[in-house]
Image (cartoon, rainbow, N blue to C red; front, side, top):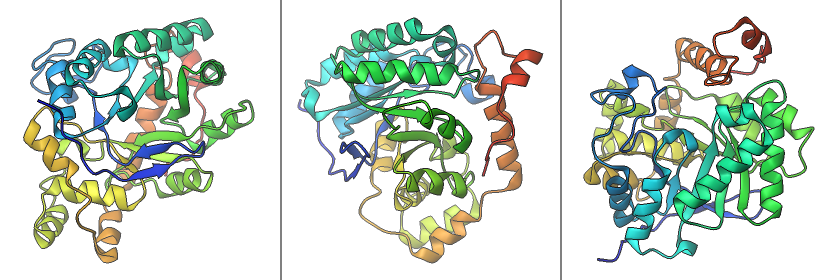
Length: 324
């Protein structure tokens, strides 16, 4: 059976690439990374598995998703590659993205290059449409990693370059040292963590934003305002959050292991939220959520490196940065 194809709009990147406005997220799909938070892991145990990533991704491709958001950290790229082969979809019709994790960024240029090559083998492709530095590891490490990606872009192994979880100050450090500007910054974006200043800064610089946790892991589906707006439009809470994201010109990356949810999550292009409803959703971001993001940022830029939980590491973390 041939996979379906959704009618998905695109957004143009600063290198001329047409990027789909929706993709399928593969984090915790079929596999929970060993250092993932136990709370977020839910019923599954870290390092364990339930439904395979191969099955989940094949279902997403059958539904019509063509942009797959992958990463070294997700631990399932080989399974994703098998799902792609199962689907029979032409490579030119896919948009494959991945990211290098903090451990390889810390280890240096050779480790970064080796990881990109591994991803190419695992996904069974000779090029990646997009490749990101997953976190801005300090001490110049993230800049060195990005320079390797520039080299691999010149070699034709990567089409577009990007970053993830970068604050404005991280971008400025990178901008001073790189020759190819990032086309993407992937960060958490949803009405409960709407970092307006950061998002608008990057968009004005020509760096498009990808959103992870756009659906807030389903934890906001029963929020009264979200439910109220969903009722008004006869849509699900997930569709309201996804549509809000799209109307911010932010690339939306939902994830689910259930086919019916995959279909539901993708149905965000046949309606539009009124400006007043968008504004009300904007107000759901609290200072507490901004503070939680700050704590996550300061932890994750040195996570899974020898600097984690050390005084040396804490001194290296760039503070203050723009958190809102």
